Image (cartoon, rainbow, N blue to C red; front, top):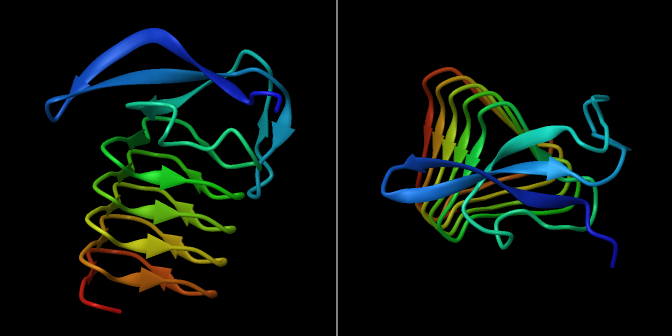
Length: 141
């Protein structure tokens, strides 16, 4: 499998974790139409386990992923969004703004999480759903 990105030597300390900036190894287009070119810097991951090398998933701006969080498919994260814990994002989902996804929550389908929203617990966001503003999503789906 051809790798989509590499982890750079650019590091930052965040919530007792060491995060690394990613760099694109090829050109591709994201589900929001943004083009990523070889050499572009992306967001921050703790390890390669956070962001899949397959599909068009990507993080950019100051988006941070750490702990056991996983993003795959065509899912994108940007702005100051954070994904951590055992959370998962996949499908065509989007996360941006200052939103946070954590614990065992999952987001997929064409769903969007934005602004200052928080998704956590065992909650699931999917389909064409939208979570925004200062909303909280929790529970056992």
